[in-house]
Image (tube, rainbow, N blue to C red):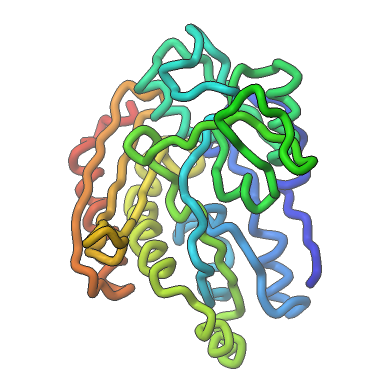
Length: 300
């Protein structure tokens, strides 16, 4: 295993003037270059960091060889508050994600969104230092880094580990980002041997969700007047059937203005026998529907 630091990882945590999509860091380019050059055989990414197809520089040279089983895609509110509505008036909430900011501002227009960047630990340090009242981060990232969250604000440690008081936000309140919680492995498109090996560990449900959600993102990408993707969320999930999550599929997606003043949201259903290609088409159609609902002057 070769560790390769991306340019997105080495930025400091200090607040920036603009959210990430307006000045997007490159979390995948350095690793992709290493795969393309043959320095490594595969690269491992958080799939939500791979740009939309039209702006993924490695597209055509690299392909997503497999998807690992999806972790919890939820966002988490850190800071000891049990809901967004419990935040104090004019609270300062750290998040550089326009998707999160837009949904947050739709619920609480009084909140001040702070464009806090850097790795997870740097952002948590900013919370502890009082630079912000709360943070919104991905549950999957916290879990992978071993950061414990809990609702008991009086409990500071468990088994020697520090506990950060947090609340999981439902998808109805904060719709996750496209492919949040999915780890993807990329390889060279012409490397048939590696592609065959990766197919063995490809998680089917994660692939179906990824195909649908990235299709939504690809469809709406370019609709905003700034560099980077527009505030978009998409989440493909199994519907409960008989108490088990093995029923049909639901794809929920939204497109938002950065200030949260307007959000268009729509969901579609599909049978449990959905194939990856069908999921991709479903996502593309839903993305096109969001654009029609938004209209040509949505961002102006």
